[in-house]
Length: 368
Ligand code: SF4
Ligand code: SF4
Image (cartoon, rainbow, N blue to C red):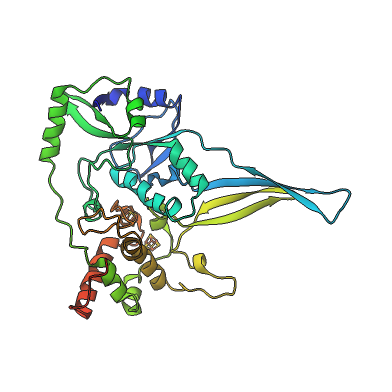
């Protein structure tokens, strides 16, 4: 596919042209945060830094109607009530501008949950089919980024329809726009082709980008986690600062917990799906009053274990990381950056490895 060039100064106009065919979600600055908003022509998308929120809201909305319902009493037999269901409207064609490669990889991990476990989620499937990702490659890693631990990279194409590579040439800033999918190619069709000097400049910039610190060896993490599973003192210590606020899960591109509620208005209503968080004590509170994850230690253990032990053992064939495992974490670092008390999932992973190795140096591992 031919690479194209998108000038910074044309970004708003090109986005406006896309907005004629798509509902466009674009990142804008709001105070200290960068959030996705529905694009309007008075907006200038902000692509210089990764958005604070993840791109999952484009394919798994924070709140959405699953269906509406109406009851009708049978006037000839008042003991009978009929129920009428109306499915939610199909999602509009959507384009999300500005996710990073770690977000785009998150799409595949959400697919595992909603499309690949035998039960297909029709609503998610429809969003997924209707949504294009126009992703921005990273030019440097923030101090919270660790995508290379989990098989990602600053210019990883997986999950994107278009990958925009920032480049400046002759004082003109813009992006070499690389189509990854046929839909992405169609989107870029009206842009001018990138010239040879632009591609050379991009290659130079990529070659000069410093390599990140080497990733730790995570090939034993799934087994190490199991070795530490019952050590509640370890998890109590790790979760001592946690406030159970759930910010880490709401910002995560791969967290998929949700709740279902009915809003009833007399003889009609609607059924909603809303993001939920496994970091809340209420998430696992059962009707009987029993709560299998009653403490912060139990909940943090579940969150870390899901990402680095349960997922890789459930999908052993899907290895993407250098460790030979697939994690349900893309190393985006949002949970680290936005945690109000600086809980760092990287440190927890390293502590699990170290503690498990100390506990049983000859037994850890071999559970991939
Ligand atoms: S963001 Fe931090 S404090 Fe809040 S639930 Fe997650 S780990 Fe706990
Ligand atoms: S667990 Fe944290 S670092 Fe990993 S994908 Fe989720 S928010 Fe990003």
